[in-house]
Length: 176
Image 1 (tube, helix red, strand yellow):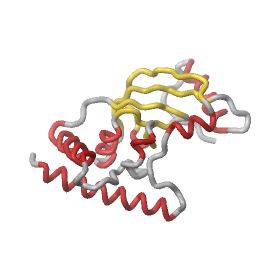
Image 2: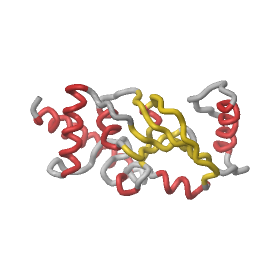
Image 3: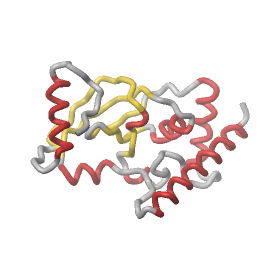
């Protein structure tokens, strides 16, 4: 397969990214991927727990662990950088590999309040989301926030953890 298919796909993905970025900026939002560190600082972390590797829903992958990666992607994980960058070259190579044989290496994510933030594999997630994959294998590290009496989401999360510990369910999100 020639690189031209990958270049074409990158161009389409970048257009989707630029559109998402512009729409969010027009609403007064950042437009870039959320970064986990800023969310962690708001609530603090009580525990760090390694989870078994398993497929996760890519719809719940919402951001990145490193702030340095956020500038390369729009909030929908589509690329923002020009096609003549090293980043684009790696995305295109990964895209071509996906089209030829699929992406096999798992991603590594931090799970925080039912959402996943990528520590390793941002471009893999980008390519997979571009092709509308529903799930992918992930190494998961769960970050348990400190209890906060004023945050109903954290209260629901602790309820989830209590049931998950008993094996009642493992990968659902409770809502109010």
